[in-house]
Image: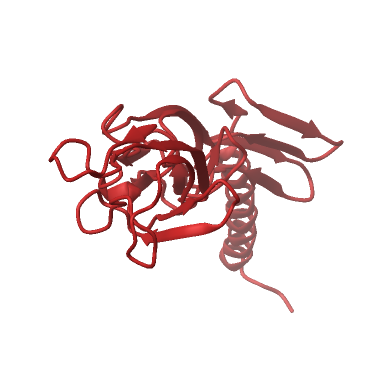
Amino acid sequence: MVYPIGGSYQKTNMNLRIVHIILILIFSVQAYSQEVQLSRQLIGSMGSTTQSEDIMISSSLGEVAVGSVINSDGSYTQGFQQPSKVSLATITYEISVKDETCPDTKDGEILISNLGGCDNNQYHIEWGNGETGAQLINLSAGWYTFSLIACGKVITDSVQVGRIYETSCLLYFYTAFSPNNDGVNDYWEIDNINAEVNKNNEVKIFNRWGNVIQTFNNYDNVSSVWDGKTDKGKDATEGTYYYTVEFREKNYSGYIELTR
């Protein structure tokens, strides 16, 4: 078939336009590839980078890291690694102290409460005496050290347990009395036995042969007190007697001279 010269020219011209469009697309892709290629960016002093023949992997601790490699097979990009949430708040707590009442009563207490500042609400308390937990009981007067562990922090602190009474709870046992109804030393009294912490006591009076002649519960120098009589209501003879006092897992003993 014979084509007009004009028609042949138009076909040839169309082929040229198709080739031209293909070349433009190729060049456009290459130019775009150059624009998206990123160099490695690492913010921070901690991180690592590994690179094989075709792929580079960059990582950092808590900062932005971007790495890109372009080859004939494709483009690989890695970035944006963030740390898990860590609380930066200050750990807070309150300490309540109950002082020991008297020497050797061992009724002091410490309580750590209102713990705050740790997002996971996990608090661990270790005491210097080896115990754990927020509360210590049965304490004597003195200093107590503890470590509070929370959210990766360790706080060391100490607490003092005082004493309410130094001498007003101490017992003093008189060694003689004279129950002759003259109004002077008619009763055998024990100093401070009526203090609150000294209640729930038991007092026994023995004769020289070791026989119990009187027993008192909650001796208080008033309603429960030895007046020199036996448990039969008779006057005990003059001489030496012995006593025992028991309370708070303690035992006291001694002698008494009874004169009339």
